[in-house]
Length: 318
Image 1: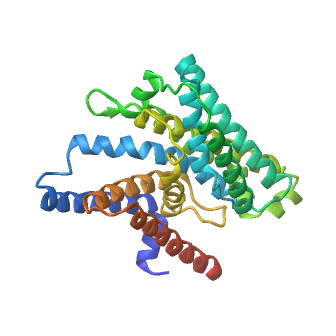
Image 2: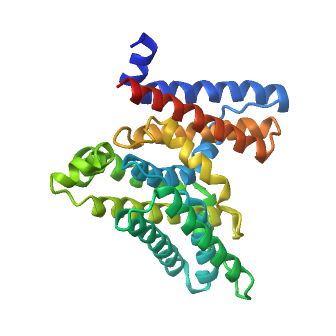
């Protein structure tokens, strides 16, 4: 193993953190050249965390799913469904709207989990099918007349700051991150998630109920994605059918950038957090360069394919 590979393997989060800082510095230089003003400011750093919180929540669920060897391609429509739910139930108050949105996310996650764990449907097929059905249902609902209202509390949570620089959505993301980081490291279900991803057959032979672990991660993924949908609609103060679409590929890219193997059993959420921050700064850089959404999607796809090929070669060598 080369020195560079050993350094990354032993200090992956540190290396990713340096990449984040370097990318932030490069963006600052380019912004000074393009716009004539600094990018590396406390306000911009605050804005980076404001945007990254949404991606970080979706990527948190995606991390749990990918650690078991799966993937969730329904996260975009799940976030959209949660956003629509908040907008539709908002007239009943923020608490009711948020609870309804989380319930919708949980329901979608459970459906995905049942298909993957009990009926052994391939995760790609199952989650893509659920995504298509969900989008169809949302399209039907969008054509109906209803009073759309995003509660003020949700708007504040998704778009505003306190103490001048601290985003409210960080209050959501931070405790979720702590729970996932500690849960994966110290809890029984965390160890089972890694074990199922590493060798599900051995887990079954050892008496582990693999289906309950898989059902759990998809259900949690649905709820975390719904929470992100609440923040998205709060930031936009309105819901539309494409509101969650830009987060599908980045949610996968953040996980693989963070070092979680697409084959399961290896990785963690700490790297995903830094991956989400890197992609958020990269998105800002592309905005400064006036890159189109199509260019961004191509870039995310290239990142995923490149890292997937690296993981495939690494696993072959092992």
